[in-house]
Image (tube, rainbow, N blue to C red; front, side):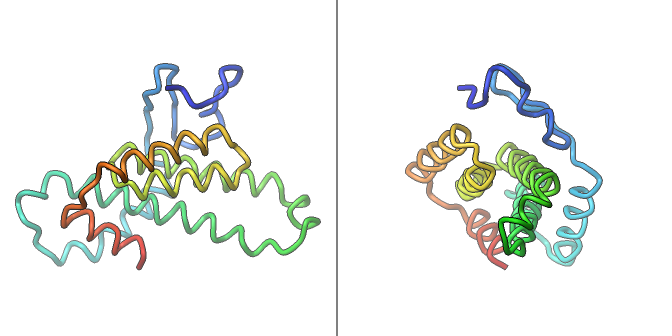
Length: 162
């Protein structure tokens, strides 16, 4: 299902994201996202992981890093304390929300942790994009209902909370 307006290209303002009409997505990491992912991997280099997760860990950890990055962008907006400040900084706020949404979309596409879809729904809600928020909230509910967390999933959730 295409959860976006058919009259405009919803990916036009999402850095590094191209959303296709068939619902698929193509993306590349922005320079800022790449730095965040690289920083996320630094402490992981000291550990050895079970061979069963060796293939999926890079995607899962990248998704986790992108989700943490997106959450950090949202937190940065909480320092806006008045309607006047919001209006004065609206272009910056919208650009920050679009960066968070783009990173969230990338996280969701890399690894199917239900929390990533929930986070993305909240970013869309903050941006006032109800249709997209409802789509991702429904996807979160569906994934959560059919989900039994693996040890890797539990580790990712712990990393998200750290």
